[in-house]
Image (cartoon, rainbow, N blue to C red; front, top):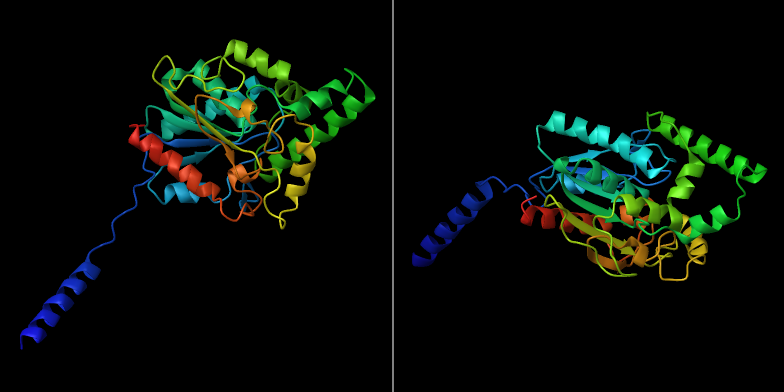
Amino acid sequence: MRNAVRTLVLTVAVLALWAQPARADTYTQTKYPIVLAHGMAGFDSLFGVLDYFYGIESTLKSGGAKVYITHVPQFNTSEARGEALLAQVQDVLARSGAKKVNLIGHSHGGLDVRYVAAVRPDLVASVTTVGSPHKGADLADYLRNNLKNGSFTEGVLAYFANSLGTVLGLLSGHTQPQNAIGALAALSKSGGAAFTAKFPAGIPTTSCGSGAATGAQGQRYYSWSGTDPFTNILDASDYAMKLSSFFYSESNDGLVGRCSSHFGTVIRDNYDMNHLDEVNQVLGLTAFFTDPKSVFRTQANRLKTAGL
């Protein structure tokens, strides 16, 4: 009889637990919205199907975060892209009712978010850059050094790059001015130095150190990047990443050097990722034991813990 009563009590307890509503996941529920900014030749979503930040928006939202994907000219200067991003940040704030945003920029998008934080620091709670060439990219220098100003080759390159940007814009539902030569100059070492001279916050003062962790108005600064150009044999883009990596004298993700990616608090600069893996591209074909989505989730939780 006693065993029967115990069994009944345990059964009732288990049924009661099952009947309780599942607790909502709040792991990524930051105080301020998260705004994601794409890099060169990027987009928000192509045909509404292929997302630039592949699977990242949904994984952040699943933990309670409010996430907004932005779109800027695929090829243009950091200032022009930054102005386009600023307009969208202001729109996000108007629609969400939030006072500030958490900016996360990939590649050239990392320079865009730095621009927004510099010209409107009152709107920015944090800046995170992912695989961004803050001190320029060796490949951009190679291309710039081998293209004479006003030459036929430069004109052809500009034409095709600008056309590509226009097509990507149309496929994602946006049309914006393109300036491929301006973009190339912005990503060169001299272009990076000029940009940093105007907007120095968060940039290391040593060749491969960390930058200031916070800005003048309390913004938090973070960065991370990868150093493995070839991570998945099934991903055709990895072969291009491996080829471009040979232009660099330091470890890199295929397009950006490890030290050049440093900004603010360096979370990690040697993930098993290449430049596209950092945003879970292409189609999630990344290294088998590295999940870019979990890195974004962890960063969102870091921002949440910091009260941002």
